[in-house]
Image (cartoon, rainbow, N blue to C red; front, side, top):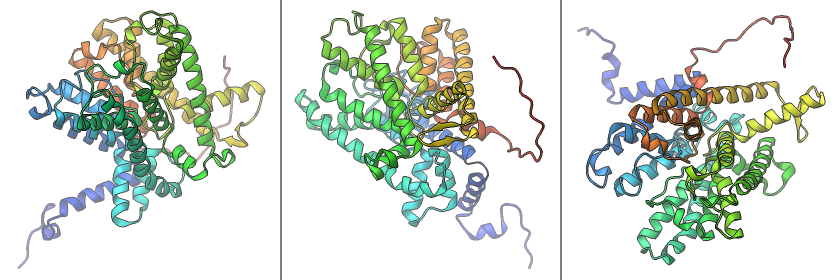
Length: 469
């Protein structure tokens, strides 16, 4: 007796897991054809999941349902490890809500696709080509052979650093009068938030009360700075220790530019705020220096603040905008255009000024394709910031400097705020949510994910130089 098959029957009826098989085949094709698009879809799905969790009534202390735009904003900010908030993390969200936020920060920091690859490797004891392609897109690794080694240290390194920070902070919170359970919770929250450059705080007044407490500020700075270097750099440091010559060019440029920006940011911010009575003007010299260094670390992605951003000198605001836009290291928990992008552009300018045919650094030649990507990242990022600023200027009718600060903080996933996010109507919050998402995914990843196909030309036109400058 013959049977008639439809697209949804036939052989698929024999397996109750046919839907999983279809999903696996879809992921296989997507990972092979466009890992960037897979990253985009996966992150969007994770954001929706956490939005749903934060929309539950038991996620709030009052038991009321959080408005959808506020739940979405918080979920995006947590998954994209930004730190901007429109409701108080300490007073609005219940214990369940705070755990959800902390879980979103951890998943966002490690990278959804990185975590998925690690779980697959743990089950199968090996990482196939598909998993490596997925991880490549998330961590910007240049060679497939490096991915397996990197994935093995991502979780262990993250947990070890976060555990160390929590161990240091717990006794301090206990000495400040907190019970053991509360002290441990706050220490763990700050540890995860710091290493992942998220900037969320479980205290209603943030870390402002600890503005003169090095025991709390120094571990937070260390966690943010290490997290901003990126896992490829951390892997190199673990394998080569202090042997500078054995470092990769990426590690050298990342650490060098990060240290330069740290010093320049500290000096600039400290100089412009030194006599400002609304910020650090009335403090002792050691506290002023501590605040300046702390601000420099946090401006590039950390998001913790010790002073009111609305009280900063206008020049300090400009410095903050620049450092937020610069961001941290590639494949790190930091945002921005990345320090290696800045390094490549500066090296290209120096080479052009000297008349060199090649762009060189540390005995290596940087390919022209890398310079094209660097210019594309800067151009796309600047365009996103400009468009979002124009839109929010029309929505909020606030001054340009205030809107630009909030926009750059959202795009660079920093989390410093002058309070504009709270004041915006729902449509304005949605604009910042989209900006945080695009900033976390990266301009190149988003552009690649949205591209319909890749073009390969089989011919080359004659060269002709246009006049520049």
